[in-house]
Image (cartoon, rainbow, N blue to C red):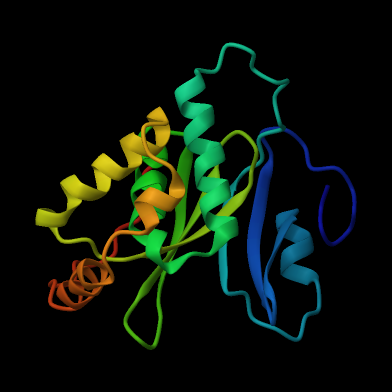
Amino acid sequence: MCSICEKPLVDRAPVVSVLHELPDGYERLDCHPECWKTAPREWEPFSSWEGVYAAPPPADKKETLKKETADELLRHLISLDDPAMKNVVYVLAVMLERSKILVERDAKEQPDRTIIRIYEHRRTGESFIVLDPRIRLENLGDVQSEVVALLSGTKTLGEVSSKPEAAAEENSEAATEVKEEPATAPAE
């Protein structure tokens, strides 16, 4: 449904998606392109993108357990908002992007030089806001092992998030030394 005119969005028709920054989070608006162009507003969007609306398909009973578990784990970790899990959240989001479940819609560099990436779930249309912790290549294997352990059930969130703080600080300090690459448009 269009967030402005409240008329239904049509499957495979153009749509404008917008993130509106609120004091307590973000609000996603999906609108007909003409509604977005003509609607009066007193705010600028945090992020916006144009796409093609895909009506939610009926529940897919054949979806693999691992993909669903990765979806659910990402949702759960984002809801916890635990800084100790930022690397795991980011790696999960990238895994889901490479599996064509998520698509990156925007990347915003913040005043403190951190990067916030906005992903959209291809099937459900949900938006995920993920901090890019700029993981160093030599630390990536450890984070991937944590993700695999969480997905396979061999480790709990408590076991993964209780790793020494010194290692987490080392990762974030090292991340500031990484040379920045120019932003590229996401491939669909």
